[in-house]
Length: 314
Image (cartoon, rainbow, N blue to C red):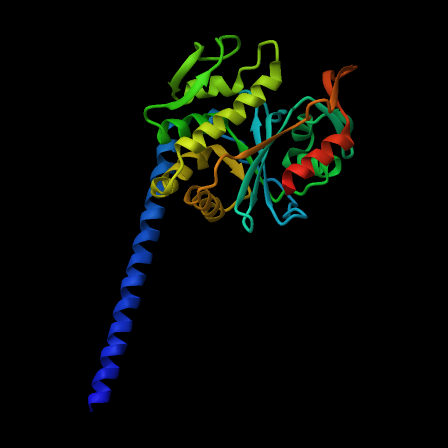
């Protein structure tokens, strides 16, 4: 009889522990969903329907690369109101290797002159206009021999909303020069805290002596500053709402769960600086003018491809 009572006590204890775990899991899941939906609804209230990101469903035949990494094609569209198609204003690849725990970022300059499958040689940013993210994926695969698993087309307003939600007091960043030409919010030089609109001016400005090269450098600088200032375990509870805030502004083939998993892994680790890379590399291109294309960056393709793969595997 004593044995039976002891056994029943153990069973009740296990049942109680299981019940607590289920309640904790259910509460966490409920909180995550609530915060996510709160972020989505917040952005939907602010959105002007005319400025909504392209909701077209794209075919994207991506997969992990030969090194086991997940590569995400990030495209910033320069579409204007009334336009159905546009070139890609920003082209980046986010690299995530779960086994190594590494996060890397590659910027591809939009004026590089490459072969676009089925279209001939053109500036790479026109691949998006000619065939959406799938043609951009094929173009990157053909020229640089790297596979992309996911894509995300980002409306720049989503970037603004994310910065304002994550940083009520702004992002601290050094503005190296006065930036006023062709930006909606002019910037003065100096170390300062920028809100979302100001950060957008910072990452889009390119009307100076170094043009698009400076813009790419500032984009990488801005993403590094955002990740550094948004880092740490204290950020994880904020992630569902932050993802919800940007979701209405993104067209992607990624599941929300995948985004949350990678983001949580990123902020939960002491990863150091994000490693960055740029195509073309120094001394890996020549300036040229091509009839019908204008000014282009004519690549030494083999040199750039080799350097790119070295960056991915180091």
